[in-house]
Length: 190
Image (tube, rainbow, N blue to C red; front, side, top):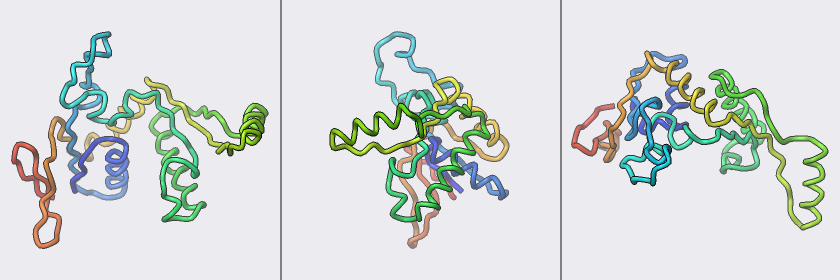
């Protein structure tokens, strides 16, 4: 099994695939391990346009060093509601949130029901707008990176991680996925 990209989708795929199966999972990413990701501009220098960008690529993806806001809503962020019921979508949001909590995400959430949100909703309605109430779990930059480190630790003995590897394309033969090809020409079977 090959997963291309070690951002949230790749990490959660690896967690799911290895949770109950003894699969041989390879995760490939063009960036580095989370603790090896360093950006020169983070030390006050100008962006060097590094390739790949250490802020965007590597274990945890672009969110690894973000402020770690998780919007726990079924009403924003995509079109999954076109494929599953509202209840199923709510269950999926909770399932993913529970995984973040398991790996150390902050328990505190913001938003939801409060007098302050009620007032903002009234003001929005007066302006002809609809406020979409949502709960946000704010992990913070350090907690976000720590949570991703804990996920990496969980997967340490369950996956093979191939950092600093660009995938050029997928290999298909007779309408069947056979593997991937890296930018240096290496062909990795699935």
